[in-house]
Amino acid sequence: MLKAHYEKIILLISVLLALILGLQPFLPSIFSDGDPPKPTGGSAGETFYFGESESGLQTLELPQETGLMPGDVLTFVPIEDDNDNEEKAFQISKVILAKRSSLTVGFEKKEITGKLMSGSDIVLDTDWKNLRSPLEIDSEQGRASIAFSKINYIFSERLIAFDNPIEEFDSEEWRISLHQPLRGIKVDDNQTKPDRVRWTKPSDESGDSIYDLFTPPIIYLIDGNLTTSLPEKVEVRKTEEFGLSLTSFQKKPYRFKMKGFSNVGPYFEDLDPSIKDMRLNPKTRIELNKPYKFNVNGTPGSPSLIKTTEDDEKKLFMVKFFKVEYLKDEKTGGVRPVGRALVHDYKLGDKTFEINSRMQEVFAGENKIELNFSLDGPSEQVYLTDKDIGKVLEFGARKYLIKEIDVEEKSLLIEKQDSSPNKPRTEKLTLP
Image (tube, rainbow, N blue to C red; front, side):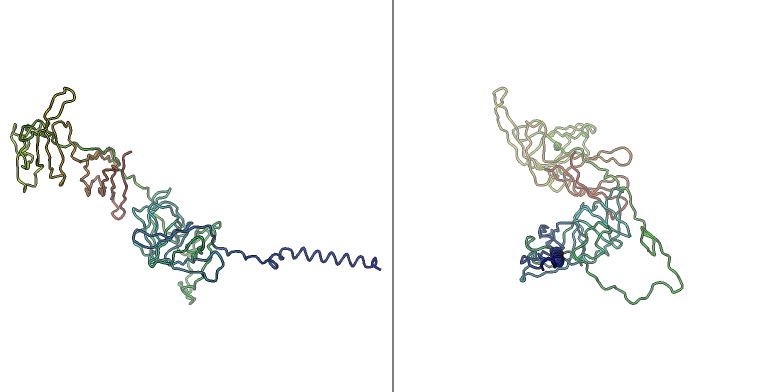
């Protein structure tokens, strides 16, 4: 009896095995009591940071390059499923592009990658398309100037800023979902897509055409895309060298030193080379608390310095204190007199300093700075002091403004202004 149904039993067992194998991939989701998988579009490992800009705005630093711009929206999504925490979306008020940062700019079906040529950070707000000054990019092909109105996207690391502070979220509990419009995405098949794309209503759905009914438009095929206008040529010019370099930064010897003394006052020697040409006597007896100036109209043999008044704009210095000390001579073992004078130089401000008879050179705090200009023709040497902040050097059609002089660091901050007045270039010069 059982043997007569062997074939039916074997067929039934085979069908059951096939059903079990076919349902195996779905069994864990049907019977599992575990937590559901976390949503995509961000990860708990992507750390973001809140901070503050120099102008006091709240900033957010993202862990990756983006094409986000002012007016776009980013959303904070809780990593763990929690009914108490819901998604929170915020509109971006400003975007800060750091000076000398690397970025990729898309414009008119083209793309350029390089460094931002700017002496300071650029802050973009929702009206950034109307900025008058172009975006300056220093690329391998040279320097490019791109009008903001023609820019489709800027892809780089940037700081996002908020006019009104938002809640500062913990990156271990929240992830960021980037609501990035299509114009902020680089055209690249291999580019990772944003978390979400927000579809917006077209600005014009009337169906009206900009073309006359019987006038066919001229269509161009540019890089595989159809367009009704030819792209404008981007002016790319080679960046000129700065042309100015720092060759020396050292202490400048003072013009006078003590050349003898009496019990009541010192004798100063004038080290100015022009004294010999005028045949003046470089040695002058100095009286205390009397201003002295250069003897411009002196006759041959007369001293190079003469007394003047406090109201004279050409006054040079005054000896405010003088005394004679007796110091032991280490070589002979005897006692040697030394004259010491406290000097106030009017050109150096309120600072006073000492000149004594043992000094071979006197340093009053001035520094001698030597610069070298080498751009057109033979090189030129230029000499400055640390008091020449604000001075303008001119070479041909170029002007160099001395903006800062750092004595401790021995460096200069100089702004170059060439034939393009709206495009100054600032560099910090240091010793090689």
